[in-house]
Image (cartoon, each protein chain N blue to C red):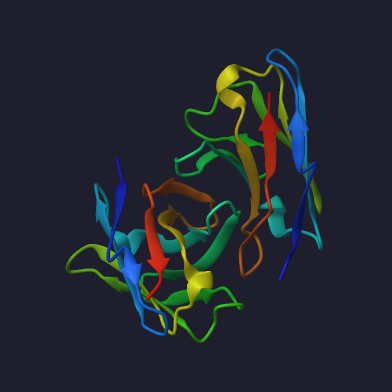
Length: 117
Length: 107
């Protein structure tokens, strides 16, 4: 049974870089689309981006230029970097799994990141 | 990118009633790759339906999905108390994937 767990700082200062890691257990990070999704307080779900085995990526155009989703196969993890953050980036960040041509079927519990000085 | 519009924004029903939630896309979704999620307060979303009409593992039989092209529906045949939550549709047939804004199902 694949499980995902987010980790990273809960507080980031404006203009700095948000960095989160998703640790995969029970499966290989190389076998699925490692995806990041966020949810601002009281708002809906927003796709951030995914990386499939370092051969295919897709990012939200609204965040393009600020996002990198990368894989570390040696640690069985994937990560998110979001640069130049503002208060609008305050959200619960989820990592999720998608198999090829499939929906996001497994999610982490989510981690709240607050952008504030 | 494809914009998904869910309606209604809020649906007020009682346990035992039937719920019908709509998700309309701004253009045809490739291969009807639409999914539905349930989100309860403080929890991660849970996959209910994928491929427009296939029930996910563990999804109760009272949940069903239908539709094709750009018009999709989630139906809950008889509402249980635990079904009152927020529901999101997702299209994953076109890049970038996009979510609808959600429908709140309240008692």
